[in-house]
Image (cartoon, rainbow, N blue to C red; front, side, top):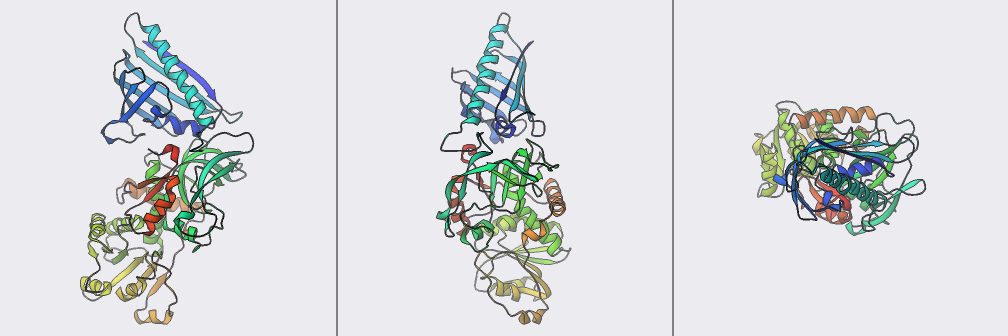
Length: 490
């Protein structure tokens, strides 16, 4: 049995080094010995059991399997399952630890394997120098000098780290989103600095870009939802640690960025079982669904609910969760394709545009009574129809205005049905750590119990944020969309 061990210190944040190494299929982008690499069977790049099939620059082929990966311990283990190089029973482990004095990362790379008689020294040298030492040097170069086209996370002399964001100089259309250079300062008291890996795209980002919501004053960066890794924390932050995978869905805006420093109170650790893309696609939408169904109007078994945009990111979660709670779910959408998605998400009936109005179709489905509660994210074009579709003492929850502001309404007209009207604000339900903890705990349980499923998101490069906004505003999307920093996109 041959044992090979190499260690080094890389003068870069642990999060930046770990982001490279935890991508089990990314070594062809940084290791000089690897020519090309592919994951087999459609596995995810950080999925335990994933097998990468790659070739070396020298022509030999290898297949390696990921045995374990821990974002908590910043370690991974893998084994060679097939190789043109005579390395038998090969198991390797990589471990990272933060350097306590400074901003460096202590890296170890260890392997054990059997070698043919007479070739142990040769193969040990090949692994030690050609794989481990060369790999460390390649990582060192990558994290300390990212290419100009993708200025992700790189160490700087001074108090901040450089990054790239998509910002606006003035309110307007999608084309106002343009690349800007940013600097994330060292976190102060109660703050955290993050290397971001996936960013959620939500309709509230459109409102910020256009100026409909004054959460963003140009020049600035939109975005309220992202996932990443903790680079460092400021004084007083106790619930987060360096290298931890975290997510957030909260103000202040600024999520459309590769790196940012922000208040830490509403940033939450992510369970290992939920990957970055899933969390970025579902955190804000899932939290919204939770408080809409459990706090704004606690849905009861036997109620009938009407959900607008049931094929959208929030809509699909509302359908799944409301059906689980025992409600009869009616979806209202615009095309048969979206209707099919709504039915697959738990809608018992779907209303489409036709000769009969929405309210007439609702009355036909409910024997003239109407629905108990409506979740309306459309706004101007749907509000009057929603009022007419409600049962007496029904509850209209207007939580969005994709078609525009609802305008001015005489509250006295609602008395004809004793209607309750709610206009919930996400921030008011998620403005304390205690609220966020309660909401996300129920959301994560719902995901674990398969009450709701976060569908794979449509992925865009961060630099293509304008394209993502055009698709969202044009109602061309179903489910969620996310942005990936350009240097992580694949």
